[in-house]
Image 1 (cartoon, rainbow, N blue to C red):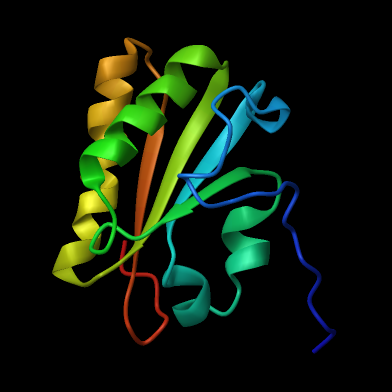
Image 2: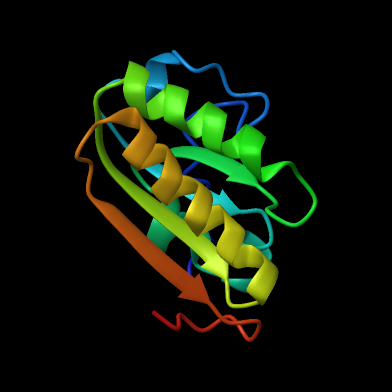
Amino acid sequence: GAPSQSRLGQWPVQLHLVPVNAPWFRDADVLVAADCVPFAYARFHDDFLAGKALVVGCPKLDDLQAYVEKLTRIFATNEIRSVTVVRMEVPCCGGISMAARKSLAASGKQIPLRDVVVGVDGAVRG
């Protein structure tokens, strides 16, 4: 097929490095991605990233409470239209979904959340 194009619209992407009030969060659809997903899911840019503000992290290696606090500030500070979490099917990856859910609740806002699970074989599980 035709070569794919990057759909990344901002920098940085690591959750620890992203400014809470970054301009790309204004009226945005936010993608919270576990950092292994783009390696397992070949169409990540086209199927998930296109048109979204991205934050990336590893729920196994990083501090989940820090994720909750940072995401809460992002959700509370900005007008976010939706949140999509894309994570791997492995048990440790569930933490990133939990962090997003806790953050939405703590933000006091009603923002639609979609949780997508990708298998280690690259197939979407749900």
